[in-house]
Length: 332
Image 1 (cartoon, helix red, strand yellow):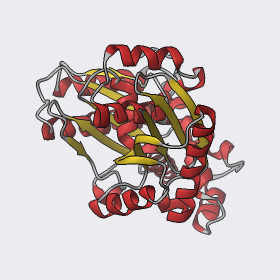
Image 2 (cartoon, helix red, strand yellow):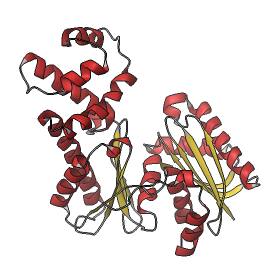
Image 3 (cartoon, helix red, strand yellow):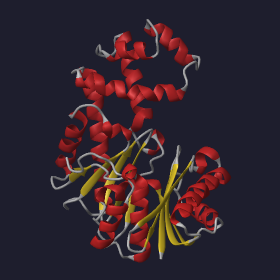
């Protein structure tokens, strides 16, 4: 029996293949696998490309089952559409469609059957699996849907506070100097004009986020306030999932996934821990051990074979390509 895991997002697609004992046989990659970004046909081509590469390395032509953790799998209609599209690739006998956030969750909890993940990259989301296997997820679709976090919201908050510092409604902050330097401007009015007339690409604005953590590390009060806001939203998202899965008083792992949680200095993680423990003192923060595609493969074992045993995990760990392991402490 052969199982595969696919993690498909806005920038890349990864596929990992293993036999029923957990021995890793092949890995493949492709481009954008999020149909909301590139369209359904293009996304399926990239997913198929990653599978082809992995199958070629493994020396197989078809898998018994695959867990496809896909960005854009949000509402029931999405799951129906994506399941049909993946089935049409005719690469696996059984297709399991999950939201991509579940891959990040499993890449952190690994052997555990339940847990929670909060993801912060460009945007933010939170997801969880309960003790009975039930799933819960926030909308993860942005501010209008109740979300706050990720580089989109954080970069807007940075600019908001910089302009308030300029006009007198807010406290002075060294973010002003850093932001002007970043955009190669000498004054706030010139920066305001470029933003107003759309002369700065949104993708460039998103790159402001690391400046926040640099300034917070230097003790800038405004930056520290924003970091603490991120921490509060992270803990609140995790708590919302805990309540929906009846994990409020349980010793539950909370996985922090995404680029925001790689921030410079201890302030963010320490603040998240303090906020989280105010809700549930038994919650434990962890960072992902593996890239999300490994989580997708682990989910294939969970959902299809039911054979995710310590022996299977040992095989996966010993045969996994080093590039798919994240070399940092799991427990914080």
